[in-house]
Length: 158
Image (cartoon, rainbow, N blue to C red):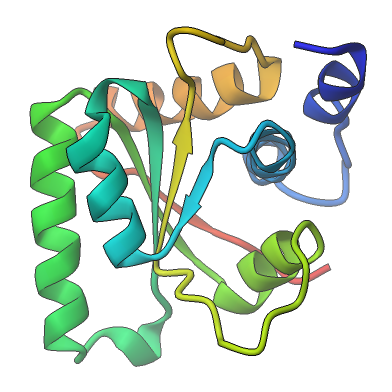
């Protein structure tokens, strides 16, 4: 990991929940390392191609998506795959804030992005260490220890 990646990874903003800030740091660092996969179908392809490199799966939906049967089926299948392959899962709400986080890192495109599933990879041939990623993992482990098998976080607007 370069010094620049380390600075981004450990940058914390106290105005948000610490884990939400850590998650933002992880997304920025993963994007810079080209270790971010965005979209349900793109994520499914990545998990099929190299499931061992995937370390975190974000599943994002807001209350207005509760009745979306297709999205619910995708989430169920992705969650099952992640559980079978020991991939940390984090459900998030607050798609507008997630969109801000992601779109601040990438070039604008003409097509809308599917932010319902985002993967963070950590390839074995080029691993990176990030205290923010560890913080997200610890949050997931803490939730699981309280029998919340799919940890949840609400992302707040700034």
